[in-house]
Image 1: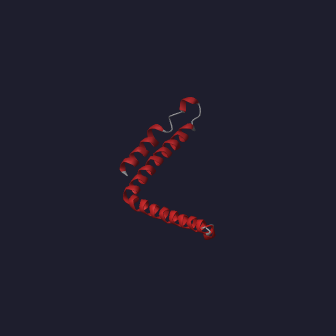
Image 2 (image 1 turned 60 degrees about the horizontal axis):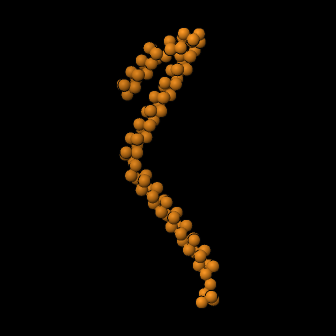
Image 3 (image 1 turned 120 degrees about the vertical axis):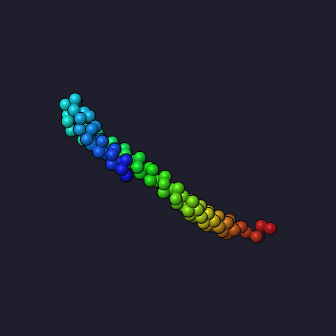
Length: 92
């Protein structure tokens, strides 16, 4: 948390408002600051997702596999039922 705060403070004080001042529009610095913060939030979110998957990944995979197994079983039972409905013993 300390590193994140240091990066945010450094961007706020040192880089953000003077970045595009030479182009004539001084509001560009705020846009640049918002883009940098957005990128940092995306990186932070990806890191949290990786951490969450490390903790709960096995249970999520197990639940997904069991869900798919149940659906495949139901589908195969339905298909077998349909095949046997059209099966007629009078042909033998």
